[in-house]
Length: 557
Image 1: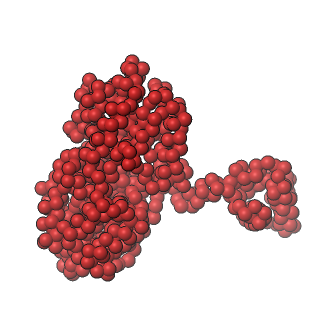
Image 2 (image 1 turned 45 degrees about the horizontal axis):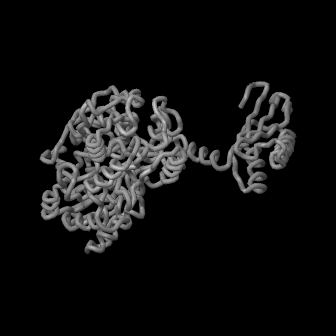
Image 3 (image 1 turned 120 degrees about the vertical axis):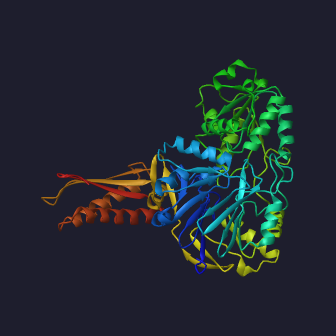
């Protein structure tokens, strides 16, 4: 083992926000840090989740020893049901709250095979044979029980921070800065650190700073207050709950994920709500508007989340009333801005007073570190080599520049893509090869995922529409029974349109020419696609999907 390098690579989490899945591999063992999902952007129609391609893990399933979870957010645990359906994970190690959320997630997804889930805390040390020794240090984040991970190997030490910020007045336990500093003094050969806020100078505001902004909203609101945030932002939810109780408001929880997470967090003592302060949505009409606080999902404008369903009239127990105050206690995830703006406009049109995070109202604090915190991290960890993780490419690049400003040589800073391999050998890091790390799109209940080809087809349908050409042929007599007829959807749908009429004329002409000699169905389809696509693109600049359908005396093809 001492003569074999250690490989480090990401299956997700690089060049994107989400899907965090990091792997550390020796000759005999693979351990994973986190197994997350990415939520789809508006450009991915019909997709529920994006997960990593687990092909490499499937091909090396005998080496997999354990999965370590840094905290309970979906972009770090959401991929576990999909991962477990692909490969066997002998053991999952997770903090207490994350372990509870994982168990509920597996029950919810009807995963029936036994799964070994072990809880860890900051004193736990997990040996993985003779290959790895894994230990932990507590960090501050927007969910309790968040940890960084230290992996000691024969070739050197790797530290992965998980999601964090350096909050000196946190809601909950402190960041174990002393422990991180000790690791740095002993020697960190490769640091992998959260890059999400690498574009923002200064320090990320403390979570406790949000309280004053939320209290101001509660002091001024004349009617109902609807607070929308991430269901997993437990520290924020606890603060809203405390303020609502102080203002003598009953709390109604809407949204499946919000109900699930709050239920688990109450069970484990992370959220404290007296039963007398909770009401069901069927009881909302029994209270005056100034006595109600609704906690719900939907702060990212998701069409199926609780807030959107209220706005669209899909909640039979309540709607938006003039005088409601709606609080967005989050910032839009990159790519979701248009969805949020659309939802805000609907709310205002219905008479709601919408409060978003701004200089006037501090309603959200990120759970990720800004540039000064990243500089402090570098000073404490003193890494010999650095790999920025958890961020879009520009974030990774800026994080690398921060390390360079503090004296780390550029050849020791590695800006990687998913699948790129780094090799740690004798305390030195070099670039290696590449493993498959494509996106897999999860569509509804299809756990096998949707291919890139299918997503390209959907994008074509969305932007350029579809043209279908029907014809009937007698293959035995090599005769056209019904000449081609062209229909369009989402593209010049009027059958009288000259492009459609002329497309049909060209299809008839092309088929007549083909039938001069005996042509098979594949040749007919190929010709129809080629003739119509060339003509339509030349006339319109568009490339709709062309679907030839041949009906014959022997059936439809």
